[in-house]
Amino acid sequence: MMSHTGESLASEERSVGEAFIAAFGPARVRRGVSLAPMTTFKTGGAADWFLETAAPGDIVRAVRACREVGLPLTVLGSGSNVLVGGRGVRGLVVRMWHGRVATLGPGVVRADAGLSLNGLVRWTVNHGLAGLERWAGMPGTVGGALCGNAHFRGTLIGDQVLAVDVVDGEGSVRQLDSEAMGFGYDTSRLQTTDEVALSATFSVTLGAEGALRAIARESLSYRKQTQPLTARSAGCIFQNPDPAVDDIPVGIPPSAGELIDRAGLKGRRAGHAQVSLVHGNFIVSDGRASPGEIRDLIEGCRETVRDHFGITLRDEIIYRGEF
Image (tube, rainbow, N blue to C red):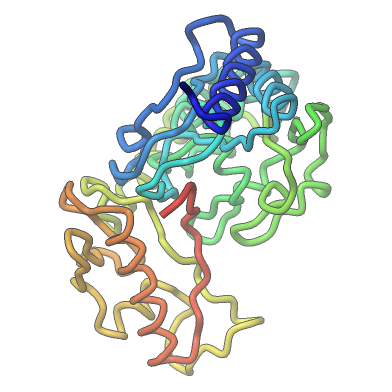
């Protein structure tokens, strides 16, 4: 005979399943899906429940369904800039891996949050619209770039944003202008609220397609020369230190990669994870690194830099799930 606890768990599972079936039909929400193949590190545990979106409205329905049954919701985009714990992620994981883009009028482009940033760049370049071409080669989605206010060579993507449509934890949708987004270096309000980006509008100008392609190629070439793009990594691990907050030693630039390099950490290993020899702010996997090994190496780098320079590096990478 099933125990009372077992009966309760089975009843809760049926309720959750029924809520998801009501929202998405009988086949779209799946149980126990491994998240490792969906991350750039290619490691990590499984999602209790998993949904891949087809349109922004799916996000809204997912938020409302999770609220109805009391489950946490975790959003995953392209899987870059994230480390998933080996014990997996509780609740529902929604993979925003879709997206459309269109012009709304002169100088305004709207993109779904699940669109890849590279997809947005290609579209604007092909349509002779300038302003986003320097983001060529940047991994991740539009939503991820908005959440972390992605930066490249001193430029923040938030500078191009006019407005963002978001859904909050209650399932209500509203539009926030750029100022309300609270954009800062590597930050936005999305990191401290329960809101999820659905789409964004960007400011663009007319440009010559050939010139835009040249800028995009130069940006991609720079990334290839300075970053281990062919290795399994998650992008930059730490934020660069802030000269206004951190006491950076004289003669050292405000760069996390430079601090890691000068601390002698390039090539440092923890199991199958290694600090990249190409760029100190990248950790790479040989294909076998566990989430625990990667996290141990991250913490080891943080501790060594603190011991050498008195600076505590802040995470740019995002942790998801249980380790």
